[in-house]
Structure formats: C-alpha cells, structure tokens
Image 1: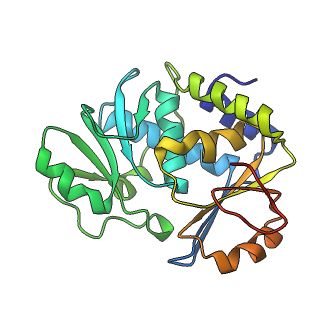
Image 2: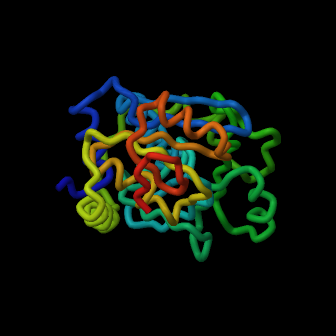
Image 3: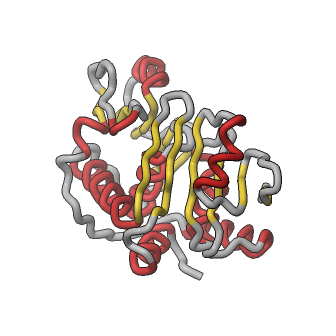
Length: 237
C-alpha cells in the first residue's frame, strides 16, 4: 500500500503518465475536461506553490476547503496533502479558506481569514468579480512554479481508510469509476482517494443528468459507480 495521497499521484505518474486519470463532466455547462496523471501533477505542483508563496500555508495547518466534487477540488486537496496541510470540510477556526464563488461574500463578512476563490467554471475561468481580500485562484495559479518540493506530507490516515474500502469492495486498477451525486470535501475518501488507491481512473460528473449516464458509462468504459445508480453497472456505495 502507498502511504500518502502524494505518493498515490507519483505512482500514477510512473504507471501511466499520459492516460486519462480524471475525466470531468458538468452536465449544466456541457464541460468535459480530461486530466492525465502528468497534467494533474502539474496542476497540483502549481497549486502547492501558489498556496505556499502567496497564502503562506504551512505544514500541519488546517485549511478549510469549501468546494464540491470537481477536478479543481481534487487538485486543491492533493496540493494541500503534498504540503503537509490538513484540508477541512468546514471553516471552523481555519485562517485560510478555499471556497467557490457563491460562498465568498459570507466568508468576507466574518473577516480575519485569507480567502482563495474558485469559479469552478469551464477552462479555468476567473471569478466573475473578485471581491477585495480574495485571491482569484484561476488568475494566479498558471504563473506559479511547475515543480514543488514537499517538506512534509499529510493524508496518510485518509489513504489507509481508502485502502480498507478498496479491499472491501474489490476495486482494482482495471476499473473505471463514475462518480455522481452531491459530494464535497468530506467525501473525498469516496470519490477521490479510493479510486486512486485502487489504481483506477475516475469519471467525475457534476450536475449529472441521469438520462445521459447510461451512454456515458458505455462511452467512458465505466465499470463501477459511486453516488449514482446506472443499470447493469456495479455500484460501490
């Protein structure tokens, strides 16, 4: 077993650097984004550098991640784990919050936090309006460095829990897992880490249109689902 999320990504890079690791659909916008292990690792490194250099996130620090399941959420989580930070699904006492656009106004009202905003729009679209005190992730991340030297990693306990679920359901590297439903960071073990531990690839569907799922299962050669039921396809949860 590989002991951290960062090590899982490095293993995926060695195993298949060019094949699709995360394929993302948003049925509300028509977006389809495909990330290989190489592309994902590049985004993770850039994000880790951005959060280190511009936000001063430190190893061991709690960082609130208020985002739905999305390919950029996967990037943010993997970056934080590679930095040794601890992603949290609620703002709580965290002094750094990474959030989607609809939550920014409420976060700014409380004050006293570093806030990073993501539009989660197609093509890494910037925020529609950037409030004072918010770092626009999309506007800044592409200029960040492509290499990140990790001082300390985190996420080992989450990886162990994901391994236990992999063993229970019999997921393998031959699987391609379609994830639907309304998942957030609190469910990252299900929609992100479990497939990565199993060396499976992920088809992540936001705002999933049930009428399109059977065709997508066929087109993407999906073998299992999480969060949605598709006829004649094994559901893991």
